Image (cartoon, rainbow, N blue to C red; front, side):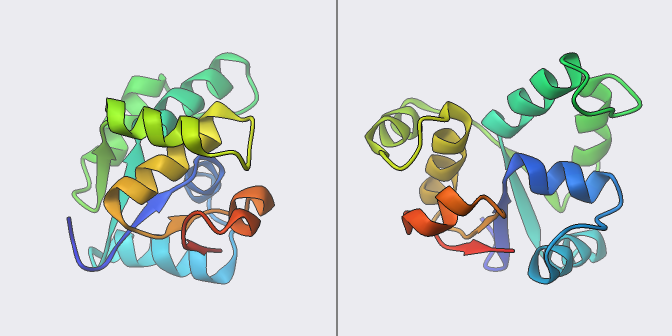
Length: 134
């Protein structure tokens, strides 16, 4: 784990991939730092799964298969997948601020890594369960 690292929420990653126009200023700076190789952004397994579901439901268009999208993303060493394990599932189950399983698992990933989460999600931000930037 890098000293200068973050975890990304699904919408932040999708917005960055789409050009970043509506990212918050700190989120935009974080992704720009990753593109320069100055920081690492961890991508929780729950984000990968959620992106796949959104693409399958045609709520987002990755312009390629999900597997190829993430192969391209992870070809940049600044983006690292973060595997889901049982301890994160238990932590997510203990979180009571949301009924969204993806949000709970993504927050659990950030907590597992002891890193801030790039998110605009107000429920996550207001919960105080993890440091956030936007």
